[in-house]
Image 1 (tube, each protein chain N blue to C red):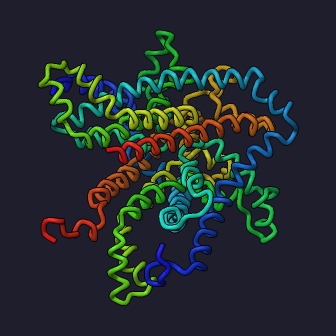
Image 2 (image 1 turned 180 degrees about the horizontal axis):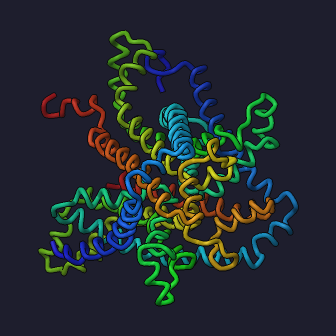
Image 3 (image 1 turned 30 degrees about the vertical axis):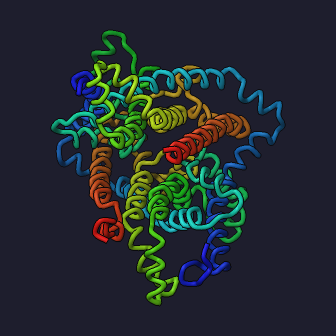
Length: 278
Length: 275
C-alpha cells in the first residue's frame, strides 16, 4: 500500500481505525459471545452436559430437527422453481412476484407467526372449521412448520436468482438444441452451474430455520417437551432463572452459527477459486 | 424454454398458501374493526409509545451501524492485519446467530452486574432493561448490513480516482469526502435502510435485554404479541397492518435505491472503446 499522505492514511490514523473497528466488534460481538460459554461452563462440565441431555432439552432438539427437515427441503423445491421461472422465462407480473418473494424479509417475525394464528387459531378465519374436524395447526407441529417456512422461504430463491441470471439462458438453449428434455437441461446443465449458490442458500435457510424465535414463539404455545424448539427452550430456562442451563443449550446454537459461517466462507473461497480458473 | 407452467405452478401454489392467504387473513381481521376503533387502537398512548421506541431505537441503531459499518468495511478492504479473514467471517455472526441467543448474550454483558454493564452502571448509565438496551440489541442485529453493502463497492472502487484527486492537489481528507464517500453513498443508504427495517421488526433479542414495560421499554412487536395472548386479535392485526405499511414503504424506497446502486463515478467511466 502506498504511504503518501494523499493516497493513504498515516500509520497512526490506520491503527486508530483498526482499533476502533476491533473495539466495536469486541463490545457488541466478542464479549457477549464469550460470556455465553463462560456462563454455560460456570458450574462445571457435568452440569453443562446434564443441561443439554435432559429430556426436555432433547425433545426440543428433536423438534427443531424435525421442523428444519420439513421446512428446508420444501423451500429448496420452491427456490429452484422460482429461480427457474423468473430467470429462464419472461412473463407479466415478474416484478410483483419478486417483491412477494422478498416480503418475509420485511415482515416482523411476530407478524409472520401471528398471521397463522389469525388464520387457524380458535377465533381465526377458519379456526371453527378446523376445531369441528379436530385438526390442530397452531400450538402444534404444523403451525411451527408453517411459521418456519414463512420466515425462511426467500433464502434459497434469493441466492439462486442472481446466480441463474448471471449465467444467461444460452447453456440451457444449447442443451435443448442438442435434444435434451427440459428436465435433463435443468438437472445436467442448470443445477451444476448454480450448485454453490444453491448450497449457500440452503445453509442460510437451515440456520434461520434452526434459530427462528419470534414467529415460532407466537404459534408454539410453549408446551414443554412437545412444542418447544431449542430457542424457545432457552427462553423458558432463562425466564425460570436457570441461567447455566439456558446458556448451555445456547452454546449448541452458537456452534451451529459458527458452522454456518465456516461453510459460508468455504463456499465464498470455492467461488473465488472458480473465478481464478475461469 | 420448457418448464414455465410447472415452475410457475409450484411458485404460485407456495406463495399463495404461505404468504398471500395468511396476509389476507391479517387484512380481513383488521378490517373487522370499524375505522374509529382501528384509529383508537393504533393511536392509544401505549401504541404511540411503542411506535416511538421501535422507530427511535431502530433509527439510532441504524445510524451507529452506518458509521461503524463503513469503518469495518474500510478496515477489511483497505488494510491488512493478522486475523482479518476471521474477523471478516465473524462480521456475519448476527445473521447466523439465533436472536434468542443474541438476546441472552447481550443481556449477560450489559446487565448491571455484567462485564460491560457494571462499569456503565458505575457511570450512572443503565444499559440493559432500559431504552438503551433496546438500541444495543438492534445495533447487534443490524451490524452486518452496512458492511456487506459497502464492502463490494469499496473493493471495486478504482484506485485511479483517488490518484487523480491526489495529483490535483487534494488532501487525503478531501479525497475521502469528495471522491470516496459520494461513490459509497448508494451502498451506505441501502445498508442503512436494511438495518433500519430489520431493527423495526426485531423481537427475539430485544425481549431479553428490555424490561418490556408498557409506555417505557415496550417495542411494537411485543405489544402485538401481548394483544395476541389476550385474544385481542383484531387490535393485534390493526397494529400489524400499520407496521406492515411502514415496512412496505421502506421496501419500496430500498428498491428505488438498488436500481441506482452503481455509483455514478463508475457508471460515467469511459469504456475502453471510447477512451
